[in-house]
Amino acid sequence: MRLHATNITFDEVSQVVYAGDRKRPYTAFNFVSHGKPEYAVSIDGKVSIRRGMTVTALLREPGNWQTLVGWMDHGTGQICGVPSPVVAFWEAMAFLSAIALVVAMSSPLIGSGEWPRSADYWMLAIYGFGVVINLCVLRRSMQIVHRLRQFAPARED
Image 1 (cartoon, rainbow, N blue to C red):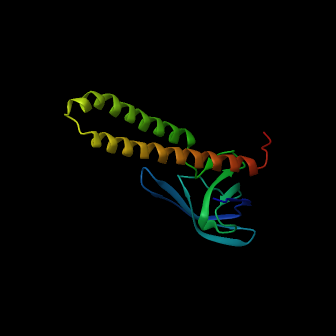
Image 2: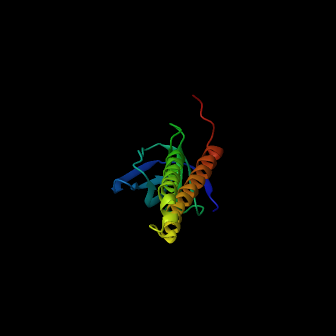
Image 3: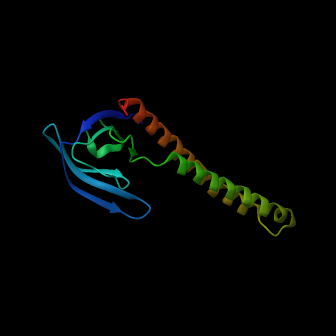
């Protein structure tokens, strides 16, 4: 996935709407920068957007704000719109723990004939899929965070 970095200052911000549900909130807004308006831009999470705010944004397509992946606020250094790599890591560990528990609990039953071996394979596949998904989210989040830090100008505190 090729991401394109752009630095931008929001000259005007309007119609900021916090939507989504508890597990997947997002912020939709319009903005004007250098006289060019952008409409219906959305970013994952409940993000504070202010007039005069300068960000380094990552877009999947250059100049297309509908493909916004995330940004780093130059004023605060906060990264927004990107799933937390720490959360993805611990979710992967939870799935790994579930796999270990399934193996530990079912191994005595397999030899006795009380538990079909195919059930173990299905459970391992389901939990393994959860591990793989969370590790992919972890990798992608870390790549995006690294790119944002790479392209954002150094902060002067």
